[in-house]
Image (cartoon, rainbow, N blue to C red; front, side):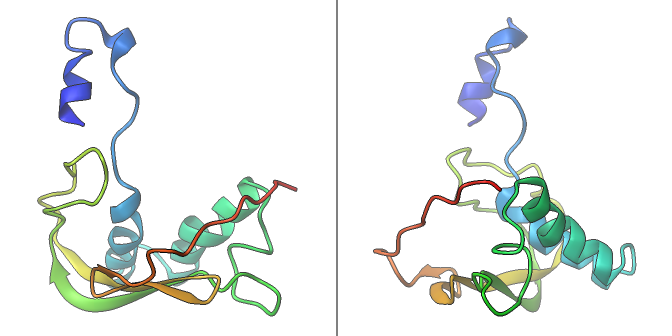
Length: 132
């Protein structure tokens, strides 16, 4: 949160690292694809395939194939600004970024979890995946 970040104002050693942005990553990257700034292959590699490989989770994650987990994000084409993030940080460094898409639905292992910004399955639990 900004309050936590402020703790490091006088001593950067106690300032939490990084910035929030997980929620914004896919819509921003896909918007940049739609604008012609990155290729479809670059979008897919950056947002899905490469992270799965880096963390030793491929091919269970990072691809749509028989035997993979069917984790899918469905985007809708509409102008969108990140004004109310769902993270504990409670702010977005991308507030003024004009995204051309927003997340419509999220499926985890084929189960609908989020639709139109509404949590659909509050009892669904993630599972620990051991790195390969």
